[in-house]
Image (cartoon, rainbow, N blue to C red; front, side, top):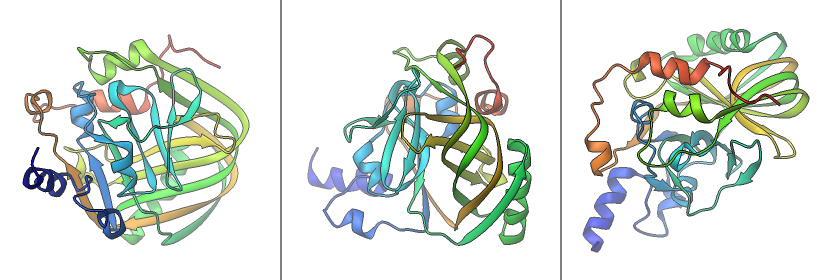
Amino acid sequence: MNLKKKCAAALLAGLAACSSAYAATADRETIQQVALLQSLAQGYFGGTVTVKQLRSVGDTGIGTFKGLNGEMIVLDGTVYQALGSGEVVVADDKDTVPFSNVTFFDKDITLPLTDIANKAALEERLNKIVNEKGANSFYMIKMHTTFPSILFRSEYGSQEPYPTLVGALKEKQTEFTHKNITGTVVGLFCPNYMGGLNSTGWHFHFISDDKKHGGHVLELAFQSGKVLIDKTDKFNMVIPDDKPFQSLNLAKDMKEDIRQAEQDTQPSAQKK
């Protein structure tokens, strides 16, 4: 690939550096998205950008890895990979990413919370802030506390030819219940107009303080905590330019598949 093509690809993706200055000038007020949740739902699990490129445009966020090999938690500039086995590792810079959302986190709002009985209650309280500050903006949150109870999932990776997201989770998902565990929830809110590009509303991932446990949050409860909120009004998305992506029918309604992937537990999933 010549320099002109390299620079064009970098401008398109917003994630690949044409010069060493790129990371230093990345916009702190932008949600950077790799591909679409709808493409992931249809089985687009191939890696599009590297972990190193992702870190150049954000220090906080969520996502997954090539082959749907575990859940991604980006916290304080480190990209963690919660594997299907339950183990958490620091992702290699060369690992590739088919879907993610990251930003450089700047605290705009602090929200103290008490007596949160479940995930729905947390979302209800967060939505009050969203409605007050602007429901058409993006919000990234970080919340560190002790959870009397939390249920999260991860998944083992799939091989080509890739199944759909729901199919992969039915076969590969593992679930973990922990009591009295301290850690951080990283969450993203996408406004309603993002329904064709992502999951609207809230999406939470968790990582424990000892960096040994983590995944996609299915349920939680906590007695008190302080939510740090970054309100963000810009959005940038990578459009992969490979044959598997370009062959997808992205007009297909994937709402139910995404709902199942975001919310459903799997009866066959291993519980720990």
